[in-house]
Image (cartoon, rainbow, N blue to C red):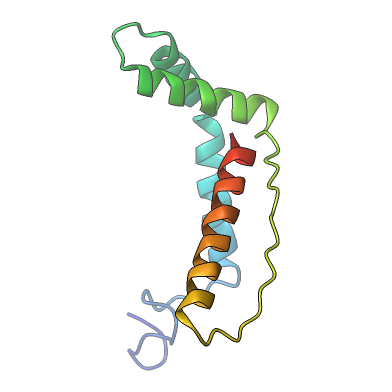
Length: 113
């Protein structure tokens, strides 16, 4: 029976008090995951080399292996700053702003390619 006169302690559904229960559980999960790493890599490699697998699955498996082995590639993002006046009183002003935004988006698309 649980301590405290038959009542379970707050925060512990089993009524037992563990000082580092969460840390212990996390280390067990990590240990279990590490024990399966070699098998997981072998499965990913089999998918990558399987000519019957879809190209999408083979590419994803290849990417996973490269990311784990070499690290993910750096991604560079170039930003385009557009400064405008916020005083949009006429329809022409709003159309000009729409065009400027569309131009900035088009520039961003060409930079990304």
